[in-house]
Image (cartoon, rainbow, N blue to C red; front, side):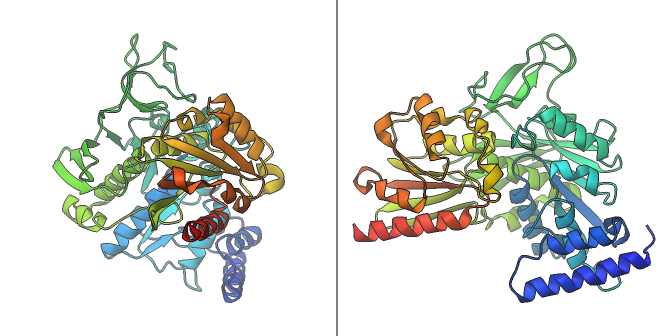
Length: 457
């Protein structure tokens, strides 16, 4: 797309705003791009992109996979344009393109790794044609925005470039349905695990029947929710063959084997949570398709871990304190976190701080999502206390009672920091602090208060 005079005005004006925001120590990940698009709606089409573009989309895992890809590519010598510190909607992506370009709109990077919100597909893909598009999974999400998977799939399919190579989760039949006209597709997944079942035990299952004949789907194994190896008993519909298969999972030694048509390679796990194991296998698939050898991927992954804003453990005297992003308003993400806590060893307390204060007037209004989340997983003998903080604490309290959690185990306060006073240190040896995407600072204050309480004995 040919650059216009309006484009240069948008470029220079937005760069000035970006420099100004940075100088006053404000976040410049959204506003510069918003200004550029307001001046020149075709800004993303006119600005030069790196030679190779990787897009990461899906309900859960976008940020983690994007970070893994960025770190791995940079260790392999590539310079990356990315939106790891900012917004994954069109204005945020425009800001990233702006930051990776000079004053003439020419790119200064050789690879772009862009996390793209599913609903932003129509505003991004007409201007950016990724070489690779990874879809991590597709679940029901925020009731306000992404509550129905068919709605999200339709948005993605209406905009996805047909020339992009798709890298899809083979264990997610909804994810596999995107890009029906794309000719190049590869699939990643995880082999049967010891903990698998043949029927899902979760409340939320976003695909239950065959999309061809409407028969009830059957599973060879279920990992969680609708994720697993499925087939229709009455027609040919089934999970696709897997090109990158995570197998022989060894949690004790933190190893997973990834099988491909070229052979097998053992990788050190970045986490023992199945969500992050999927994220890791997905990143390996993208890097392999990009052309990086399995040996090099193994080397660069060896010291990788989940970013501390999403998972962090700390020893405080004889207590282990774990900060864990649970992503409020996302029933699946919370259910996976609850299951992880249930499976963890020790006597545990859970600090439940799931209110979203990014837009408090609206975002804490609709609490229906908690009835899709498996709070029943917190009804476990090893979980001795559940302490709720936040303006909607009573909603979570009611949900826990419905889940069968004994009333004497539950405490709540409207201020998260105040809730720490209910923590009984003599009952537990591990404390989980669960928080939302936009409340990391609140969670840090809770952790500081817990540390203070532990130090006082």
